[in-house]
Picture 1 (cartoon, rainbow, N blue to C red):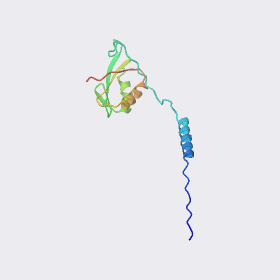
Picture 2 (picture 1 turned 180 degrees about the horizontal axis):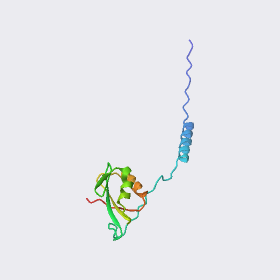
Picture 3 (picture 1 turned 60 degrees about the horizontal axis):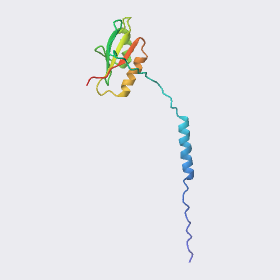
Picture 4 (picture 1 turned 135 degrees about the vertical axis):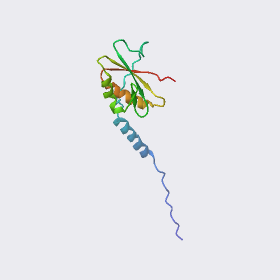
Length: 130
């Protein structure tokens, strides 16, 4: 009667698996960029932050989820720069930006990025009234 030989199974070594995971982690960490794609400069205003001087034009811009309202007129995002150019009368334009309730931070940053590219506009972020 022949006895069956049983092969003793070796335990799987996970050392090589750990090495591969470490190398992948190192590769992705070194190949990714940690630079900022865009920046929006926010400056704290002084005590007269919400008012315009006598030689400045003052308008309001309200940001909501679908678009913006400039001086009481609803506008789409792609028409913001054109609408602001129409409002400028030669005097510096002070624009009070107020986010509506429920507007996300990303939406606010998107609109502020558009406004920062518009020349001749002094943007002031106003806290929404509760």
